[in-house]
Image (cartoon, rainbow, N blue to C red):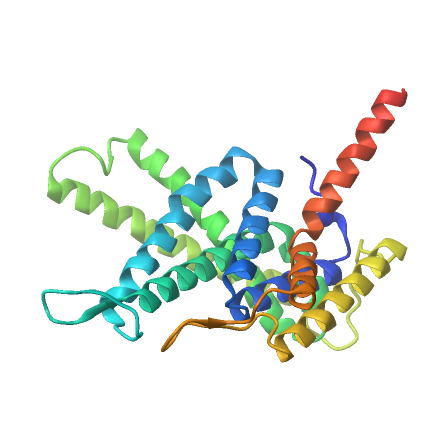
Length: 296
């Protein structure tokens, strides 16, 4: 499905992901965390399909389970003791739930940051911060695009080495190690050369000099203005919700949480709408195009 939200102004895209990632880390209520993770996975699947599903199963689910099992092994706080380990340390319900909560939080950040990396491209990042912090914005832009470029170059180098009989999956241990070191040396050399070439290219174009103009294809229209107003409302509303502890949830030493009533549910509903904003926009655009096709 076509990602309509990606075509919004870079300021709207960046502010949205900044809000979602910030609240994903701050809000520790299980309902809010489940909403954040579910919307992040749904948005990724909506845009990337099977690829996003495999990513969630290969990385997010193991990360969640690992954190859920690791925390009770090292943290023994809590008043609800379920059993005792052979070492004499207790296994508490609070430590298990806190581990699950931490795993959901980390998985949510991973999923949303993957979408951030897909939507906020290097040209958008430089457009937003090129004049404010030109050196840092260039470094961050290069960092964001380095991983996919490195992955593609690594695959090309591996295939080239395999074609001349140097395969890391065959041969003795010494031969495979030697081939892996050769590939690693090639990749390090390529990375350094690529960084130097990029720096020389940007310097020759006068990047970062005072008074330098820049071409931009982005225009802030009424649609972006409405989205910015909506994000501002959500930010203020949810900050007020955190101040009145509508998302309050305590794990240690005992579990305490804010009861769900009409007021607290309103904050959770706004948070659901915030996390699901790009999903709703894509569904609305899809329905619009289906209506246009049916009318033709």
